[in-house]
Length: 82
Image 1 (tube, rainbow, N blue to C red):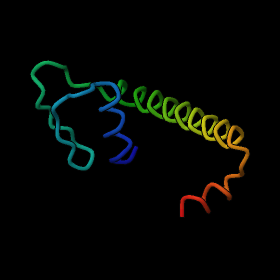
Image 2 (cartoon, helix red, strand yellow):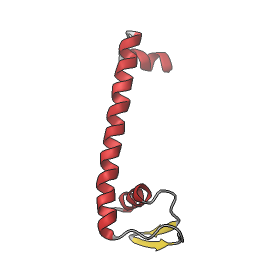
Image 3 (cartoon, one colour):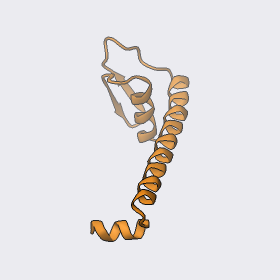
Image 4 (tube, helix red, strand yellow):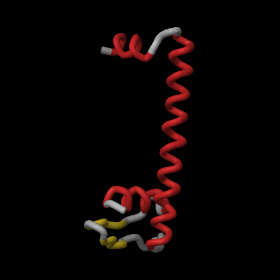
């Protein structure tokens, strides 16, 4: 698991937690939330990636619906916005 993966996983499972991630080492600063275990972080990464996939699919569906409603292609939309 790389640095960004671990960061995203911790943020996903412990929203608004106070911590510092240096390389692979977590320095837990939060006095309210408990530091997640490595197993929780791994599970959190899986959940985070699944949530990102669902969000991306929803955005793509919304984009396709809007293009269809406007009756234009994605290329035509890019030309309009450039």
